Amino acid sequence: MTALSQIVIASLAGGVLATVAAAGTLALHASWISRLVSFAVGALLGAVFLELLPHALSEGSAQRVMVTVLVGLLAFFLLEKLVLWRHAHGHGEHDDAAAETEHEHALHAQGGHADGGRSGLMILVGTSVHNFCDGVVIAASFLADSALGVAATVAIVAHAVPQQVGDFAVLLHSGFPRRRAFGYNVAVGAATLVGALAGYYALAEMQQVLPTVLAVAAASLLYVAVADLIPSLHRRPEPIETVKQLALIGLGIGVIAAAHLALEH
Image 1: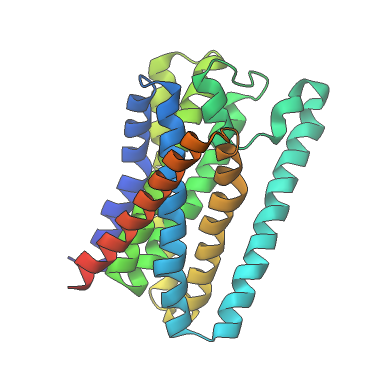
Image 2 (image 1 turned 180 degrees about the vertical axis):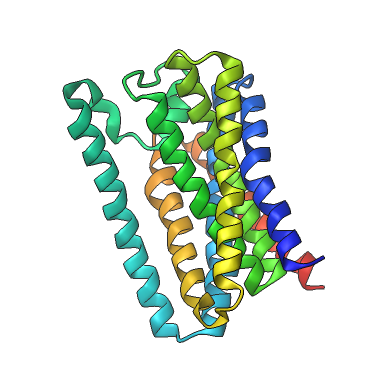
């Protein structure tokens, strides 16, 4: 199978199939969404530390890779700040909850407390950009190594499902009919394929920049895990809940490690 074929299949899994899976999870109890978040944290951390960073370090300068990760983390922090500031500035006092991240929307929406002031259009635009970037990460990973591409795809799908649950629930809360909300989410999921194709054609002849792109990808996934997902897990500090979270985080890491071992042999 060619790299392009792998990228197309993986990006469809990362976008459209994640949306379909997310729609199915809306019927589940809210506690299942937090379980998905815990698993996603493990998958993201596994992809970063077991796949993306080791590969980037093996192909490029260690100092350049680590500086790129550091700069990437700060850039994603500033980008999120800019998005939140523009949203708050544009909507004023009615958007006090604008600082909530996508996974927080998922958790609140499942309990019926979604922020109705946040427009469906903003959700769709924001998720489209996010999915496009995920597609570029998938393309860069497969161009570097098939095992790396599979690990990145698993991590992206793992965090895309709870994100899409939140988007779908917010659209419903904003007054979109269920069928139309689902259709829009599927269309937005296709942005992953667009990003993957753009990444493939931009990077196919630029192998020398792959270590830098992988470092940026690692920074992106690490930021999502540490800045967005992990804080939501702290809402349940009970010892038994913490044990469950750690077990699911370990499961997420284990899936990435197992995929790596399976594809290496």
